Length: 281
Picture 1 (cartoon, one colour):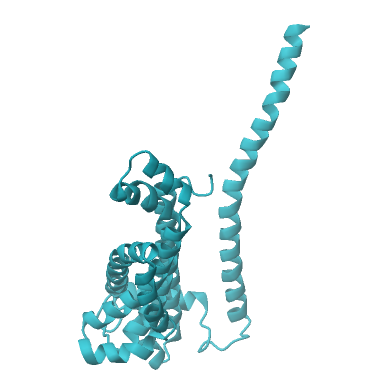
Picture 2 (cartoon, rainbow, N blue to C red):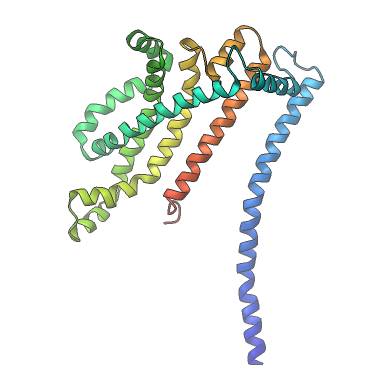
């Protein structure tokens, strides 16, 4: 009887574990299926609207026309440059501006988070230009830096800087004072407190700020390319609009959306790898 009771107890005790594992596996599969289904539903709706002639092709080309534009620009190019060249130069501008912004914003944000006086100096200046539309000061950048790559990268840098800076400042101020006191009680000096307590603690906020910054930088790309550029995915959309090439406009928008999703996915993957404890403690 004892053997039977242990067996029944073991069997009943393992059921919740199996059910939880099955539920977790289903959740991992369910989310991608829902996402794919949502995309397919949008494509089906797009095809139905164009097939029924509910909207003129000039305003909404059919999916097949956009696909033909993709093949055409991929092989023959657009205005002397291939689609990959337009995309690569745009991504290069975005990543350079974003990387420089992160390199500047992280140490400056840490210093501002520690020093209230420095934050009092920087906060009104950053807030002032942060709320300005990019085109408002892009004209000034063109006058000062010219129409070359420097003005475009600087514009993207200025767009990328505030979210990272503010996230770092907030992260530093959110560090529990008990952690710092505990490290000091164990003999940690100022540099060790910064390296082993403050910097690891701000990583979750930093990654959130970087993801927001990356999205803002990518949306500012069109403003950077629509005025002073002859190449780039944003410029391609702006130029195609002037000649009513709606299929190319739709193609550029779709490509920018897909690459934006990919960049955000890379950032989320890095966040999971570097900050595995986020949401678990």
